[in-house]
Image 1 (cartoon, one colour):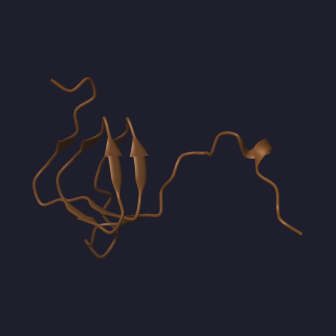
Image 2 (cartoon, rainbow, N blue to C red; image 1 turned 45 degrees about the horizontal axis):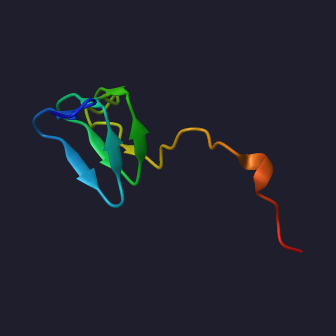
Length: 71
């Protein structure tokens, strides 16, 4: 049994390179190119009734003080 299972509701659209860990994805959600860890994702409807997609979500990086530009 997984310690942090992922639960995905009905009519969910997941596209591209997306990683989900320990999430609850409610119905009618659109996710594209995301890294999501232990979050509840719900559908947000726009004024025209369409669903606001979730794109390019990533948590804050760790260890950035170790990364420098090559000059």
